[in-house]
Image (tube, rainbow, N blue to C red; front, side, top):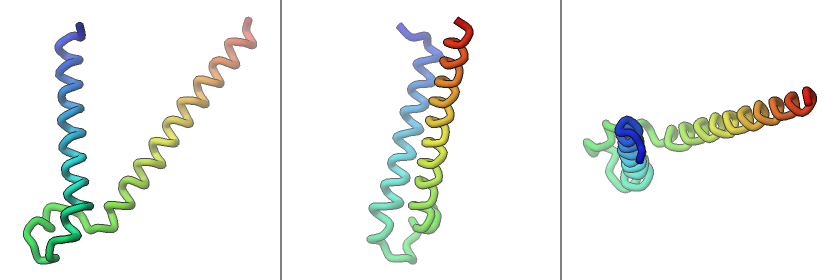
Amino acid sequence: MAPSTDQALGFGLVCFSLLLFTYYSTWVIVLPFLDSGHDLHRYFLPREYSVIIPGIAAVLALFCVGAFTGIVMWRNQNLNKVD
């Protein structure tokens, strides 16, 4: 069984993900159908950012995965040279 700190961290991450999903879904799906003068619009960034922010996040994620893969392969190659 996982320690209580791991469970609390996991619960926090699930809650954060659910909140982020709800915010982004409302921003992208609901707001285009509301008038531009609606009060809900003041809680969200302009629509252009709904494409820019996930695009930047995807590039950063791909960079991190590529860097991690490169580091693991480089370390594995160095270990094989020593043996």
